[in-house]
Image (tube, rainbow, N blue to C red):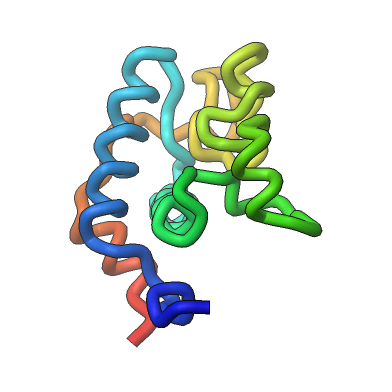
Length: 120
């Protein structure tokens, strides 16, 4: 395990890439972030951390016996197959407007994400 694996937060670069991806994808798919921005922040942070550690934005809301193998298989890499096929997001990152937890936002700032996920 290298020192990068020991950090608890995603790099700024990966966090910004995943933040921009999430905003663009929500707008493109007519989905919305959770009404609780803390959920959105934690999920994006988790995706970015997996991007740093595994090279792919593996869904952070599932348990995996072998994260590396799951990332390589790509089924649970965001957007995962259930999201792409049926707009079903287990993480509550991309919610359809009829979902009780859907908010009205399709954007979140880098600073807001760090504010919710700062581990220091």
